[in-house]
Image (tube, rainbow, N blue to C red; front, side, top):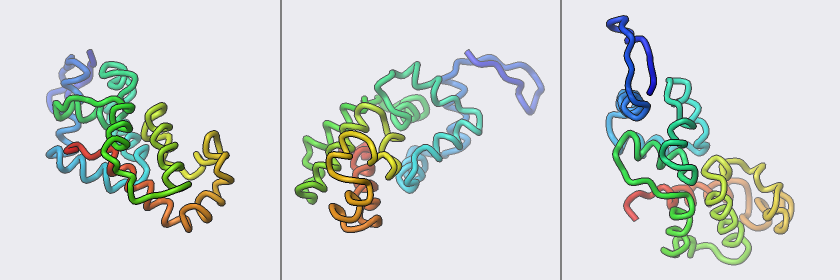
Length: 174
């Protein structure tokens, strides 16, 4: 349950966290397509999450209700748009099984598969930053600069590959 003062009537309102969130997100996004468009346009998913939290939507609390292995995207889809949530592992597995990384070969594909594994373990916010390439297993491929420059042919190509990976992860029609 969540309690708040209705700004129009001044009365104390008590409702479930889910109902409260559904209304708040409906005020922010008129449709599922609006939400998906904003989500897919934004490179850093943490920006969307922080903005929702700034507007009073407790995303972390919702994740506890929906499930620990469900990321913020599926939490929002489930609560606000009544979509069945997928776990991070299910999303990553779907990308791998549908051979959605087939345009990449060699080390580039290995790095992207490692990013998928990291997403399955930690969620979308764990693959948003190039700085994430400093830790295992990515350091096996070289430094972040070597990965970006030597394996992907530059920062823009790396970021493009990560955006494509995220688009595949968050495609709800597959």
